Image 1 (cartoon, one colour):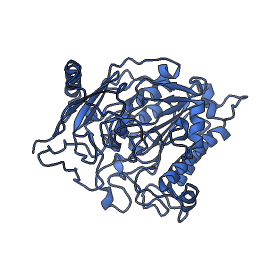
Image 2 (cartoon, one colour):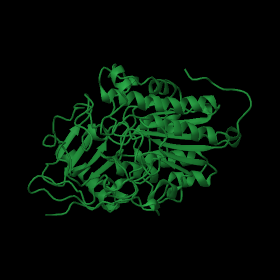
Image 3 (tube, helix red, strand yellow):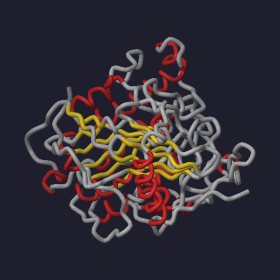
Image 4 (cartoon, helix red, strand yellow):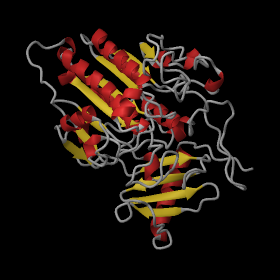
Length: 445
């Protein structure tokens, strides 16, 4: 258990502003962490302890089934469709995936995060926070594979969106190397053979140490567990030869460094800690349909745990659906700011749920993925989730579908023919939302 600190109030406690730490894994689906007991071979004790001291969200969603759009949605509080970034920024310039014969080509999608959009880091900085970014950004231009250091345009790096510090954030969607030398222009090589996740964990801890006497915000987005699947030999051996489980243990170790540093600096009791993932797993979750890139649950359901001592009851759980856009208002409001000026904001403040509430003022969640990913079952389409009903509208060759997640959590049975009136209602709502956010549609070929 974490140690509770008492005694002299720190500067940030006196200010009434909580520290905010936002940890986001890459391509990690639910079911790969100790806290839900679904995979006992996985060794993630720090995340288990985080869940024991915080709230586990059982219906957390990513705004997109692939990474860059979700990351943009987190930063801005706007959906990928509204931003205009609906698929991952390609490492190879112009690399839009092709569909089967007769399928439309993917819609146009932005290749970097526009500088004039909102940023929670910018808002927090204006509220007096020290702001740091450590890890994977993937919002800074296409063509990173052709570079020597992942830098396509420094004008789109985290520093331009309100972060005081940037270590690791560039155009890369996956590491050029998991081991030092990293070949990343935003990370100084330190020790040959050092593992990237371990290094980023050290940098996250150092940021906390350097800023613990004032309110601070840390966005810590490790590259793990994105492909290529590689981990230190000793951890692979410890995990029975599994590179993937070794990566998970290293990720958990980095989380442990963050929590341990919060503890040692006396800031843990005044810190909101969020652990999340940018999309469903590239390695599927047994109890969800499909995987990353799919509009089925396996592509968009993600783990989410939030700890905030004094606000969230330890060991609690919440089954209200939440999504990526919710972090912007949650962070800004927690810091004492206001989101009233942001007319395009699509996220909601999660604090009512943190305090034990059982609902949010939101009727439905929406997804828009006008792109081809033929390795999964449901792509090139839009989705609406309202209650237990999930409707899929195909933009290409895949037919419309209706699922009831309560009766059919694995989404095996398309019941559209049995409930056409429900499908029609959801289709109307989805179409209205797509029109409202000026969603870009696939190109007819």
